[in-house]
Amino acid sequence: GFIEDSGVTVKIAGIKGNDIVGLVKLIDNAKQDKTVNGYDFSQSSSSEELGDKLVKGELDMAVLPIEAAVKLYGETDGNIRMVATTVIDVTKKWDKSNRKKHSMSGIFTTAKFVRENKHAVDALLGDYSYSAMWMTEKENGAESEKLIKEYDAADTDKAAKVIASGKIACLRGETMKKAAKAYLDALKKVDQNAIGELPKDNFYYIRDAE
Image (cartoon, rainbow, N blue to C red; front, side, top):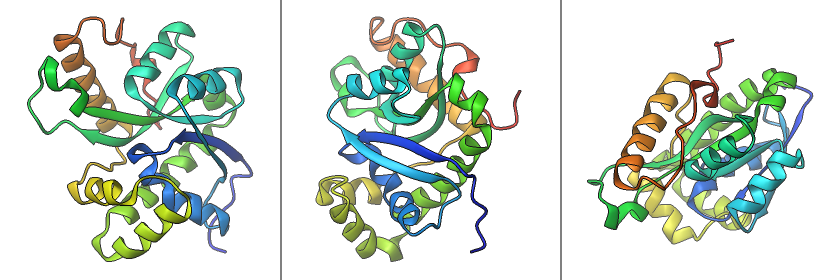
C-alpha cells in the first residue's frame, strides 16, 4: 500500500462513549492495515483504571478527560503528555452548576513513550486526524453509525448527536494547547479544587518542539 508502516503497535484504550467516537475509523482502518501505526484498542470501565495502566506502561496511550490527565501529571512528576483533543464542548456559558455539561477529553501518553517512539506519536496524529474528520463528514453518516455499533464504541443515538454538533475534534499542537489552557483556566475559576495545580508547558506535546 501507499502507507508507510511505523513498525509500532500502539496499545490505546478509552471508555465507551462520546470520547472515543473519533477513534472508530482509526480502529477500523488499523484492522485493514490502512494506518501508519498498528493499534491494539481496548475499553476500560473508568478513568482511574486507564490512568493506572498508562502509568504502569500497560497502555501506551489513553483517552481521558483532561482533568484526570492533569491529576496524573501531578502524581507522576510531570510524566504525562497531551497529544490531541478528542471531544471539546465549550460552547455554553460557564458556571459551577453546569460544569458537568462542559468537557474536554484528549489522547494522552507518557514522556517515556514520546522519548522512545516519537515517530509513532507523530503518526498517531495523522491517523487520528483522518479518523476524526471522516467520522464527522455528513456523507459518512450511515457508515460511521454502523462502525460505532460494530465496535460498541458508544450509544449510537447519542454519538450521532455529538457528531452533528461538531464536538468531535482533532486539535493538536499549539491549537490544542491554547484550547486546553483556556478550558483549564475556566475550570479553575469556577472550581478551585477541580484540578489542583495547572500543568507546565511540557504537558502539551507539540510535534516540532524539542
